[in-house]
Image 1 (cartoon, rainbow, N blue to C red):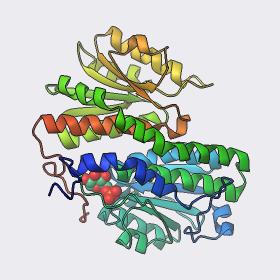
Image 2 (cartoon, rainbow, N blue to C red):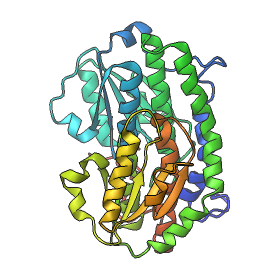
Image 3 (cartoon, helix red, strand yellow):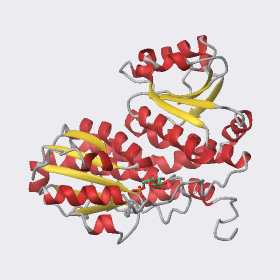
Length: 371
Ligand code: G6P
């Protein structure tokens, strides 16, 4: 009913707007005032955490994109080698697992059969399993050694929104916690990131309050046959997630690419007026940002319609954006949180304009409990 949806037309739209609160809840009580991580719920001893020599993150669907972002953050902060794999691929390929492997299983529902089978397999091989999950008491956390709950609250819309964003928060917390326990990052570095995490709810609220241009954009793309999404570094999984949302909700052909891969194939797809979403890394010391700007120039020169998500005030990229969607200024590793918001809003709005059932897209289930 409308009451359950708080006056929104869809649960998805309600859940998108709950994200500032969900992120705040995901952070609540998990660090001290001085910015030290406090993850008592990770009931794996510090000694065992120091012995870990490899992390494998497994998940399906949107949760797999959270896993891909986590790899960038966890490897950077902890210097532990981190692999990401789809649960169903992992389970059937004879992966190398030891007592010193930490398997992190990300699942919003906690009931995805592919992921459940994969963690059972990992535990048989004596690896430790840590679940990142949104559903208290569900099967995956029950069968894991430890769990970090994402505290997003129930997610009804089939396409994950607040589930995804809070998974990102849980992954950042896990990475920082491991860095703290293992001493690969020092107190002030950790505190700086925690301070940036604490600013996210405010950033998200402002994005939601100022989302009119994203909604207008949907009106202009309702007849698109195909849409591409480009990103690099932590923005690459965001591009994949943006494409998945369009497939799920609008039934439009959409693909995400790593921008560096363009010249190795996908650039052949660029044609006049093809909409291409581009997630631009923050301006920083490395070359990521400038390389992305060059990629955008290239595709625009070939007639693509560029829809650019970039840090506000990024004057380098603005001249090459047909549509510019400004993002709050955050560190590179946290940018996926703010970049996800316009892509969710866009897909929800486009599907609504097309007359689709946003909360229950055709052929999809909220959780897939068969392998
Ligand atoms: C289904 C849903 C997706 C979800 C995936 C993984 O396919 O339609 O939205 O991302 O399952 O779900 P999980 O609950 O394990 O995160």
